[in-house]
Length: 404
Image (cartoon, rainbow, N blue to C red):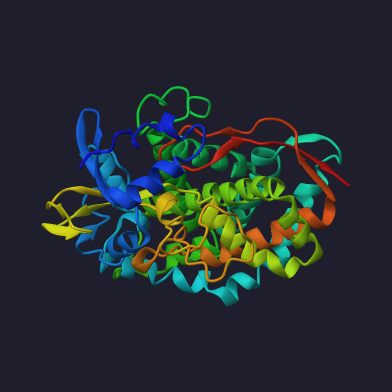
């Protein structure tokens, strides 16, 4: 069956996710066909259980066959995406993830807390109390950029460039972010190539240096799937880690602060009891999930929720819908920092569960602790503007007044 609304159209999301439509379709067409102009459409998977089923069957629903975005990519762009961890299938995905996983364990990441707190307080030091700031770019944007920059040992002079490129890749459909390519679904492709070229040059530079004790040493010195990475391999791996570490974290922090301001009673609870903040971060991730979807491709004829899916069909896991599934979450459209359990899917599930989950949670915890501690008054100072995107569930502008 076909939906009566175009869920592929990025303009649909400018005023916020279509939660009422998702809810209706979860009841009536939980797996529905969506056309894409000029190319093959896709099956949109809306229920929590069905998204989990797709995610936990990577050989039947492949990330590698066609990539993870809705569009049919040309051979060159698809080949580039296949070198990204998020678009690998097992066993290659397992082999590439294995050398990196120890660097992102909870115990290792916990050791970064003071450094993340120092970075956060330095950013907040630059906020003039009582002034109006753009939360997205002035407050939330610098934090993950600096954390990723230090993890990789990137030159400080390159941090802003890397941040801008990462934003252009993920917000390529928004003409304000990417005016030259916003008419196309892959509008951020040039920025992605520039990031890859930067990584290749940086890898060559680092090979000529002594070890620095950072993540780049791990990437250059470890065997991935039985071999050391070439500079070209690094060009495929590096952009994904940088983009994920930057953009989705900025979205979590900025959307989360906006949601808290719009729920003042719960904001007051967090001020009174900061131990509630980790639970609030999980609810922010459910309520304001940073990404609408990731795509898979069926490798054989199959069936999902009673719907026949043919080999080669695109299948999109809609986290924005699954995170508000009435069969899993009581009062799913209500923001509740006390929600427990909270099996939100914003970090994925199964083989592709987010490698940086502990880092993202720690950044969220520290950020909200420090912002709430420093600014007793936080209020919206204008109309927020959402990113035009069918992939990113994000704002590109949130004016706020932070007062001491």
